[in-house]
Length: 113
Image (tube, rainbow, N blue to C red; front, side, top):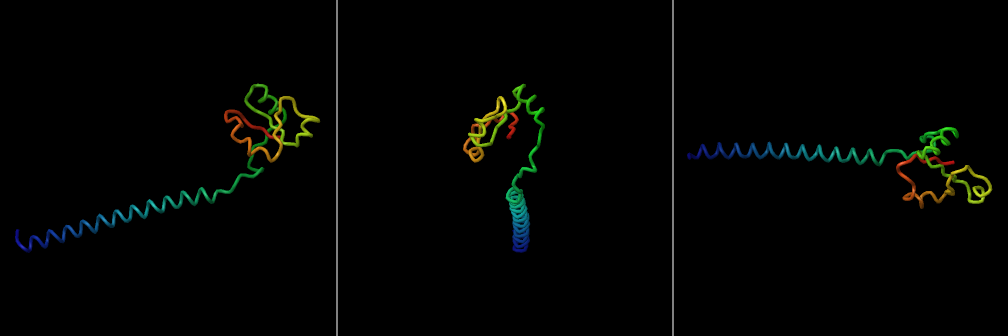
């Protein structure tokens, strides 16, 4: 192979390597951008408030409880619950719901009173 052919071949290799580096760098930058956007979206999501929760009537609650589709939790104090509560409701005083989070059923509608 002549010297000129070798230089041409080396120039082609350099161009190919530059092209690969450019494509790889661009792909990496795109991947990092997507990851940053996904993380920013999960961080920037505002927390749920009471206004975000669905509301249902007492009649709907009763019907869902009768069919086993819902559980009614009474979040008032234990004393208030002992004095008067809805039939079939479960006492879960406010402030204790986070401790009982793992025990709450995941296959039924949870209604808090």
